[in-house]
Length: 326
Image (cartoon, rainbow, N blue to C red; front, side, top):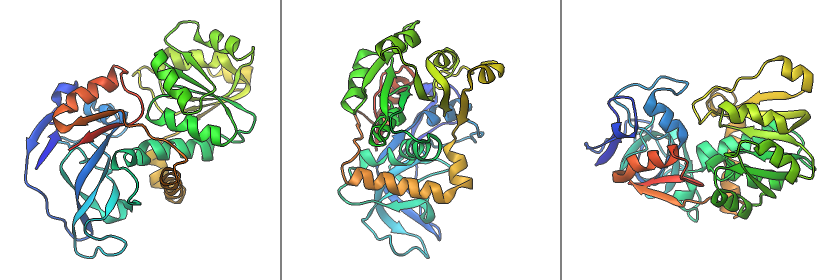
């Protein structure tokens, strides 16, 4: 089989397509033929070795795979059967591959009508968006929320979930194309945050009103400038720093403005709040299966194109979910 391996840290060029033997499942494991593997910004951080957890070498990237069961290890039974489609969660990576071993307890059966490419967004992006809305955002009816990177993997889901909860949603992005896409998902307004005075533009376009809630994952100046359009008693939820720059602001600011700053890390929910995470993932599966949320997979790559996939994400050229098709 073919898989993508890194033996060194660095730019996208360290990604190497190799051939290796198809593995055999040990007791408690499932062998999947991968139909679609999700590509996340965390994979880029892993590749650079700047993820919050160290990345061992050699390493196969990819924390989520959707595929069909080829073989069951000893002790694995219902609800799993050969040929069934499952979402595999891979804490130690491995999804950038034609076949992958997964622990049965980290596999979730999927309704057959769910497209494998769309299902790759359920674990990282889906759980992240749903948990932030349900666990951290608070009351949303009548509130105004700003979603940074509203056309991205998490952002596009946040836009839809926030609208379901009755919020007015403003999506930010780096191009008019991305803002237009966010509006097709339900965003009430778009703002281009590549322009220097974007916070003032937002307030002006929003009839002089600031926002009550911000979902922030860029860092650096975007993080700092976001406070300029946040209401008194407003809340910001930080779940990343895609720019690679720290978001710094003096602690007295929070006293002066009564702003709240919360943070989110999916890995901690999986480890310490497993029940809440499992319920969230189940809810997202049902929302997708029932057609209540839309997942775009406009950026689909083969394993041979994995370098390009990473570069396109880093150059902010993608919208929605980025998928590898082995």
